[in-house]
Amino acid sequence: MNDTGAPVPQSDGSDRDHPTGSATVVPPPEVPDRSDGRRGWRLLAVFAVAEVVFLVTSVLVLLPFALNASDLSEDRPVPPGALVTALAVPTMLAAMVAAIGAVLMGRGSLLVRLRRELSLRWRWRDMGIGLMLGAGGLALTLPASLLWAYLVGEDRADSAVGDIFDGQRLPIALALVMFLVVWLVAPLCEEVLYRGVLWRAMEYWGWKPWVIFGLTTLVFSFAHLELLRTPLLVVISLPIALARMLTGNLLASIVAHQANNFLPAVGLVLISQGLLPE
Image (cartoon, rainbow, N blue to C red; front, side, top):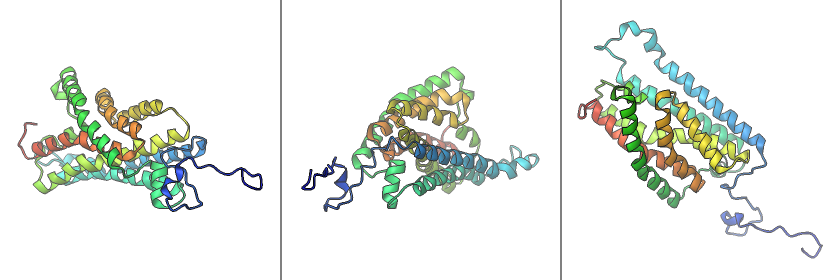
C-alpha cells in the first residue's frame, strides 16, 4: 500500500528485460497468456492458411511436369533443379506465411513479437539442450528406422524425399543446395509451423504441456502425408518435441530437428553423387 491507500503493483521478476528500472513492466514472453483463447484461434487460422499455401505451392511447382508427363521417361526424368525447388519452396513459403501472420498479431517490437507469438528466443543453453536431444535422439531414431525398414521391407522404406531423388544424379552445387535444405532449411520451416505457431495456439488455450506435446507430434507426423511412415515419424519427432517442451523455446526444437536431419542429408548427397547404393 502507498500513502494514498492504493495497492502497489508487485513485480514477479518479469521486468528482467528492463534493468534500467523502466516503469513499463513486460511479462516474460515464455509465459503464455492462457486467458486469451481468441489469440489461440487466430494463430490456428494462421497455421491453416500456411498449410494451404504449402499444399497449393507443392502442386503448382510440379504441375507443369505433370501436364507434360508424356514427355518424361527414365531417360528424361524431371529436372533435378525442379525437384530441389519442389523440396524447398513450398515449405519456405508456408513458414514465411506462418511467421509473418504470427508477428502481425503481436504487439511491441519485432523481437518481442517473435518471443511472444513464436516463443523464439536466443539462448545458448537452450541451443545446447536442443543439440543434445537431437543428437542423442539418434540412439532412438536410428534403431527405430532399421526396425521399421525390416517390418515394411527395404523396397518400401524410403521417405518421400528419398523416392523423389531415387536414381537422380545431381551436379555437386545442386547436391549441396539439397543438403542445406534438408539439414537446415526444412527443419527451421517445419518447426515454425508445428512447434511454433500451432504449439503457441494451444498454449493460449491453456492446454497442458504434455497434451500439446502429443498433439503437435501427431499433427507433424501425419502432415507429411506418408501414411506408412507415420509411426516412424512419431518416434523421430519425440526428441524434437521434448526439446521444445523442456525449454519453452522454439530455437531448441529447431536445433534438435536440424541435428536429427544431418545424417539423412549427408546420405542424400552421397547417393546423388553415386557414392552410396540407392
